[in-house]
Length: 422
Image 1 (cartoon, rainbow, N blue to C red):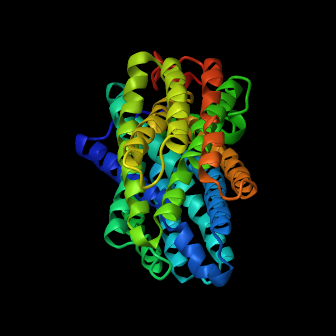
Image 2: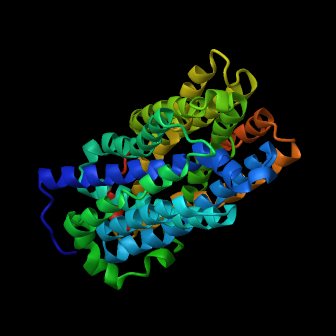
């Protein structure tokens, strides 16, 4: 393996800031349709709109985004292992920014559906390349903190979006502007492509990588198949839980509050995102203190309980609703700080972005299916948000069992994982 000098402190900070901002804007895209979906559907469907149909379209938009993110994460993650983390990360930002901006000009629900899929390609591609780049440029001692900060970026984006739409509410007559504004991060994508330094670990691994198996094929070799399958399942559980259960609270708040309280849905998303930002930061820290498996086990129990409490024991416009939403946001997103720490530990440098991307974004394939199923359940239950949310909350409980099949990576570091074995 060739030797490359580590990045300077200034270059490492630049990498962290660029990846963090990329995830912030990634979070804006993830939070956009939960807060805008019903308004978009009312505008585009006109007299054909019904509350139940609006909920079903919310599920379709979410599934399209998740499907695109799954495909983009796998193939852009593979691209990052082949051409470099920074180039693949910059391309991902450009993809989600440009296609998001086109949403301002759609005329039909179907056009928006296609664009959400295309946005998802970039959303999915950013995570594996950004996480791999940062994890390789920062020391092991700082990785739990950095991993938590990175995953907080997604929820900071959702929080910023919620505050923006509280000031300028999204309504059936005023929603195009937020999609046009979503194109602004394209400037960041150009900066990343032209100025951001590449990972020294990736550069050093190129001589080895050229002689090794293709990254995607190697992930299913006998030495890595366990890591691949476990990574996919452990990524799937919190993502399906988040999108098939937790996220229904925002259109639920929109329906109950109505146009008389146009900012209430944004406030609901804001409280959830504030809790989620905290949860993402401390999720990796808790995992480093109590162990990867024990922490995931506890997160699974907590997320199940809090999601049921949110949908069965409170509701929009009730005094304690936002407090419960905040706590649920903390608990349900502990997983994502955990994943940012755990997934890179499973794979050697030459397949790290591909492996992390495959694991994390295969979870989005499952999420797309889960959200569509939740949408059908929503229709079958006559648009009953609490019953859908409560039923889907038990998805989190699967983690209580599955986590004990995971390898214990608590004592493993990235340098030792470069031998390619678990």
